[in-house]
Length: 126
Image (cartoon, rainbow, N blue to C red; front, side, top):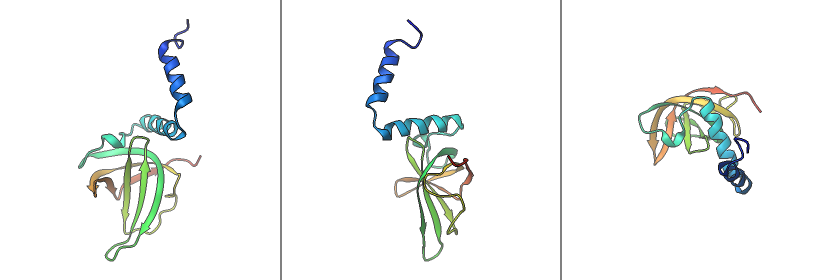
């Protein structure tokens, strides 16, 4: 019996065969995020300076009366954090489906994790 031929490997195979596409994508994003040395979003807390990595799900320009903002939801397979660039209407490369790593201080707005004006690094397009 090889090292991979145990009850654990059979369990992993069955899990992969029965997992939904969303679950498989989430696991893959979590592995990629860990490889980058990023903190899983679900473990981020208010006030922490963190580096998070994942895929942008949505990008929305939100005009406000006092200051415009560009908002993007970053999903890393564990949770979502909203990245907000104040005073910006558009940033080249910030688009849905794009992978990036962002660094900044976590805040909480309306019970959602937010990083305002994060430093970011775009990953190469896939």
